[in-house]
Image (cartoon, rainbow, N blue to C red; front, side, top):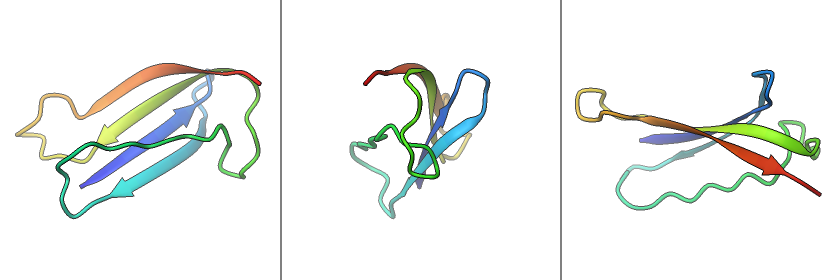
Length: 74
């Protein structure tokens, strides 16, 4: 099973993507975004959208993704 955390700016551009893959999908996942983009540079302060997608069998799950806002301040 794969869990993907995608960070987008408010214009919809992908800023960073983190993936975690496990043979056994049970248990709690903790994924941390360090406030950097895909080039390892700090992003500008502001509001970003984070989407978490879980690779599941669609017949056994009602909701395999979630999106929420995060705020970056320095």
